[in-house]
Length: 346
Ligand SMILES: [Zn+2]
Image (cartoon, rainbow, N blue to C red; front, side, top):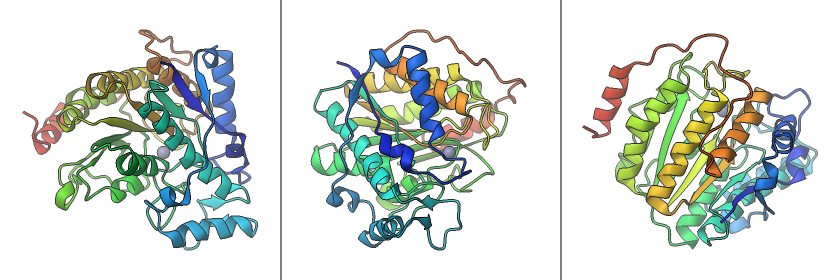
């Protein structure tokens, strides 16, 4: 079965002049897919707009109306949340089709039409809460896909892995009390949104179903792979998901403008390989990635290429960008041991 990607030109219409989260991000990804010859190895699926009942399974109807009405009156910022999260005239349509792309990818994978899929979308989603958007996110694409899989496809356990450099505060909040959707995140400590402390492990019935791993600035491939191999993968195996969704953010790249981690393109290949291995081992390969952040355009574009190479089952990847110009900060094994103990791993 093929590896699929989803894209629509409407994602380029979500735009505010000078904003770091701009359409050039997807332009660079599309160019890299062509220049590396990778696109020819993929199948393109057409994103379907999300039905309102799927959107409102996660978001309050009043918030959906708010985004729609700001777009209809010509765009603007989200009220009361500063000006960093914008709504352009075409943003509602783009956001509806961004959520729709992840759901379309999930449907294809669950129906056996694709092994795995990657939704190349904007606006991103993981900072969007049930009743408000923030952090450049309008609707929570990955949460809507998880909720759809749960409600409509008889999937009892969904794992969401979030390797964006920012904590997916919206996603984590939406499922914080829910033992059926496990959320695992690595994120740089000390930057927006300031949540995702290591002891945030869920609440009520959801206790133990959130794993948050703050990372230090200067950590790179070594730290990420260690955290995946020795913490997140064992936790995922214990959970035994039937579907794995990934908030794929490439802002841990050493090329990034917003983050201070040092992950390489090869590192993104190795990270995605682990997710592919996990999906093969636990859920017949069912894996759907959705694009979140990534603001170093080369690091973003080739990071996405690297993820596709891993999804296709390539065993090696040549890093076109190379390592960071400075060495990684040494990883702290004691910290990992404390996290393993907290999560009941011995
Ligand atoms: Zn991010």
